[in-house]
Image (cartoon, rainbow, N blue to C red; front, side, top):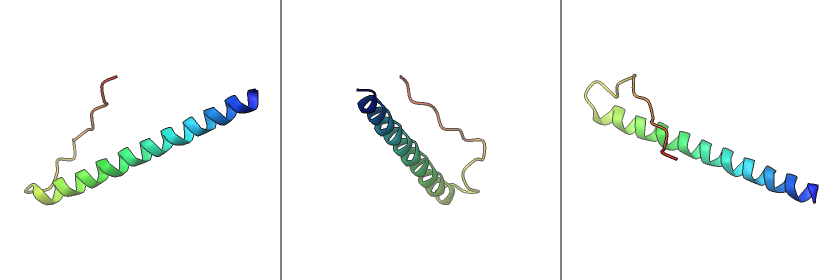
Length: 53
């Protein structure tokens, strides 16, 4: 039983890390596109907002 719970927690943690990594990749790609589209590049002070929960 404890083994099952630790396996579930490990899988959830891996999934969470995958989602965080994907969000970071998307944010970086968006920043690169904006940098190319906007005159003078994207502002450095841009911050990503946290999604509503």
